Image 1 (tube, one colour):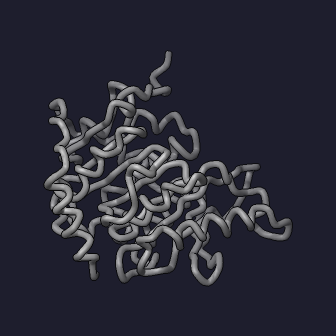
Image 2 (cartoon, rainbow, N blue to C red):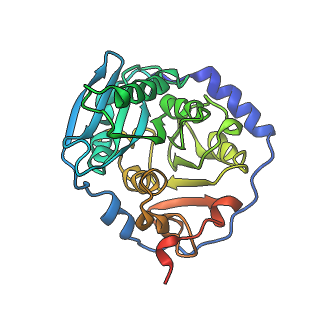
Amino acid sequence: MRFWTVGVVLLALSAVAAPQPQPQPQVERVAAASIDAQWSEPGPWSVTVEALDAAHTVYRPADLGAPGTLHPVILWGNGTGVTPKLYDGLLRHWASHGFVVAAANTPNAGSGTEMLAGATRLISENDRPDSPYHQRIDTAHIGASGHSQGGGGAIAAGADPRVSTTVPIEPGPQGSIAALHGPLLLLGGQLDLVVPPPVLIIPRYAQADHVVAVYAELAGAGHATPAGSGGGFRGVSTAWFRFWLSDDEAAAGVFFGPGCAVCADRAWSDVRRNARAAAVPDPSSRS
């Protein structure tokens, strides 16, 4: 894949000058099966893949809207030079958990514009009486995600007031963290040489003190890890979207409360929660 070399260099230079994040408290890491066991496994919905329009491919539950379900939306942006097909397993997985995934077909998703066009089209289809999406889309719960350049595009899209939460995976330098208004899960790969976390991701996480933000770095992951079925990024991203877009309290403990599963999971080489994230209670722990 080709990658935005100039942008990476500029961001790297600015990151060197930026204040460095404070050291995080040490957490004893253990082998945790709960994340993968619950959230990396396919969900209950069978999946249909179809064209939304010439610019977007949709991955969605086949039995759309049943039984009386409103489906949240995930907007997806590809890495440079590739199409949604490269991430087919991951996008199908999210759809199996009840999401309508609008994947921009463009191989250059860094502006976020094409991703947001998918939201516009789905909202329009939700309002159109003869559409299969009519009154089946939860237009109040829209997330944005993407890989590499598309991860930068997800950050750019996250500035839009329609986007509730953002999950950039090994993101490029596009978009403004300061412009985000909803919760952020920023995912990095420990061995990613294209988007090295200490230089290009952790400094961006440090800028997100105005929203709930979690940084999670997958041990042993390189830049190609998200391709296919999402690798180790699949479970945590699903749990995040289930909590923030589907109000699924069972997913809260993956990130929040003193039992924070990802914080102690050996599969993750570095996990950080800002003050806002640390203050989010785990509703599943209520007696």
